[in-house]
Image 1: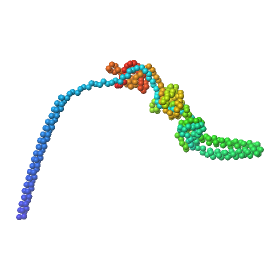
Image 2: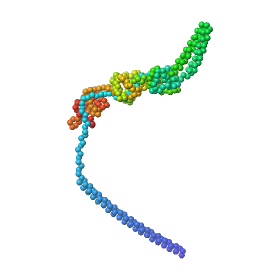
Image 3: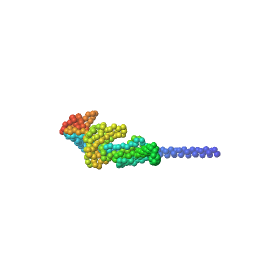
Image 4: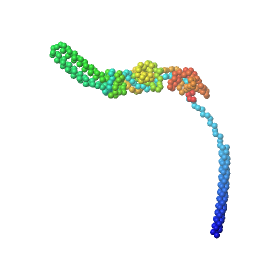
Length: 379
């Protein structure tokens, strides 16, 4: 009985499971059907949308075509004729000159050295100071010389006493020896005082300190080394130097006339030194300066000229008169060939030329052009 009941319960359970499975399958089929219906509706809506877009595009294309037909064709612009920059070729003068800023420098400088050298005790001047004859420029360390001088003065005093005693003895030989001894001691004193005096460098002329070596108290000064330079501020020359990186003074001749503009006035002078005529020196710094500088002596020095005062230099190195001169911008060059463009009716013609003297702004034309021709300056 118990076994039969169990079997019946199992059958009931299986029947229920089958019914549930059929129900789930039916639900899935219904869901699939609904999904397919939604997809179909979406497809229909998309097709309608694409159809509308196509219609709109067709309408716009038609409108564009109509507008294009209605638009007028653009008017063609006439080419603009370029304005030519013309220059009439004519005779004139061309001047090559050197111009630049220079300054006044001492005509000469006295340099002071020490014969033996030594340790520097004090510098009594600085660059730009005015000194008088006899002024102390520099002092070396005297070491023990002052003490030795004092001691020697005592020795001299004792020698003088012995000489006085010898005079009372009436012994000629004693008197002679005492006199010689005094002379020797006095000479020793003079020698010490001379050594002390040599520890000081003094100016033997009045002037302005224009050079001072880079030394200071405590440094050791080498013998015969230039340490101080004194110049006469009333004896000045005009110095002009080109930059180390460029500039050419080879065209400047000795004796060439020069003009110096200084504080609103113009002064004339002559070149007294060029790179080719500079004096020999074994100082490499001075050699380098001489190779790129010239010196001018003025006929009359300005009353207010001073060392370091700046002025404008002008030297004419070459001049040509009654020659054809054109602006430098009108000359063209290509692979060693020089040519210009001249106006020939309504067109331009290329003409080879031979150039002569050139400046920064002008060129002399020796061959190829004649007066009256119209030179085209722009390209």
